[in-house]
Image (cartoon, rainbow, N blue to C red; front, side, top):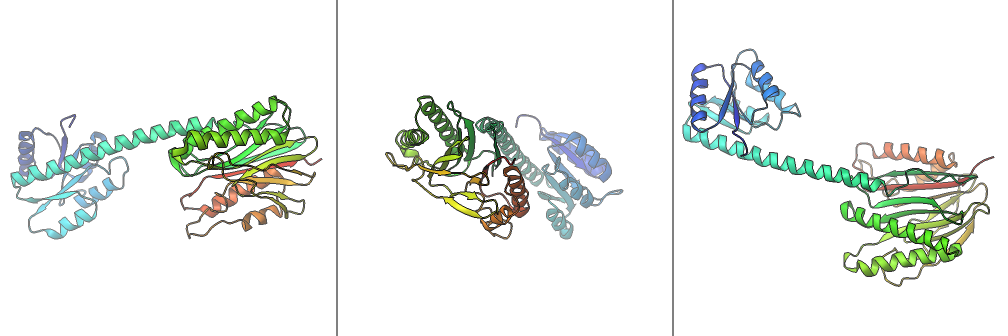
Length: 387
């Protein structure tokens, strides 16, 4: 222990208080006293002792009420409580344990038993305190990691004249394996990415930063070298794939990726789908008329893997949506999948990127409800602005 434990004695009988004070001081503990439940609650709240010895039968407020109030308060509920009760009063002892007491002490007090039970409770509290310190430290580290990771997502989406872009991203945990990106290339075209790194937690988050940085850097580099969009994507994805597969071979990490380069003037879209959910092209009527299915394997899985590049023209009324499997795989509290049908229903009335994304966000949140979010959710929508 780093400090001398403080023990609060709650008893309205002076003889019991005097006896316990003497015994505890002989054991080198510091003591506080309270003569009734009301006084006890005030001292518990202000002093936050390391342990409470709580008599059951007291005036003004009995021990059960004190115990209920302590365990209902998140600030003090972890302070261990030992209830004090007569030897033949098993019913009160059982009730005290059910209400959250750690242990009990029978009257009259037996010094060896008193010492053993107090030491046991204090040791448990010490271990809990260490655990809490560790968890708070871990939470702080995860918060730092989350803040750093946010810097790898676009602070704001790029402005492309004549086009509307909208996104929705929600991590399942403090850090995410999903990511999206959108940026203007040196040649004026728009590059965008939606990706999902395998796994969960810190490992996936670390590789998310690697994939995102490699893809952005190599795509920008290839555009500067005056390559065509087809060549740019071949260069970027092949280099990223081979680097991860060869340099980090033992980690067995990979990412499903949809990456596209959009030429704003013509509406031509050049893309690679590396194992991701098919991106969808939705017409003015809200129906999906084209699925941009896989053109290659997941990125980073196989060194030397070949990726086909495809091209398609987006008309003025076409809405392009790219997303990760976190959307169809979202689960509610009944274990039901969100699927794609609900998304298709929204598309019947919401075909502008911002309107669609906002509706998807509210629909997904309502669907998840009180359930834990199982996977990261990532969605990007692009369309020509209506005139």
